[in-house]
Amino acid sequence: MPLYDYHCPSCEQNCELLISGDAKPVCPNCGGRKLQKLLSAPAAPGRAKAIVQRARKQAAREGHFSHYSKKERSRI
Image 1 (cartoon, rainbow, N blue to C red):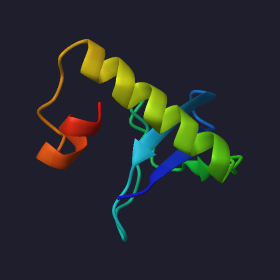
Image 2: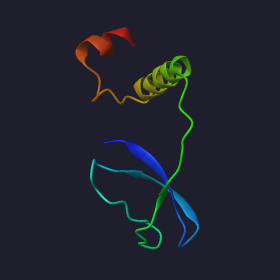
Image 3: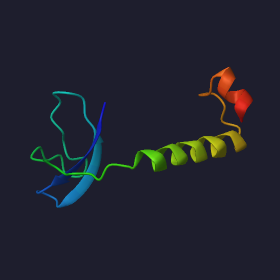
């Protein structure tokens, strides 16, 4: 499911929601249904890889290996 940014004109709040294909988004603050989808800046591909690698190394240092395959665990 994609993650989208929305603005609620009823309560003037912005929110980030995971929305499946044809689902109608609802404001988590006031329950309003007239949300406006906002444009988000895309992450640069090179930078995104570095962020993921850094996050995985941090998780490994903290001992969070449950989401790694055996091959990935041996590289850390």
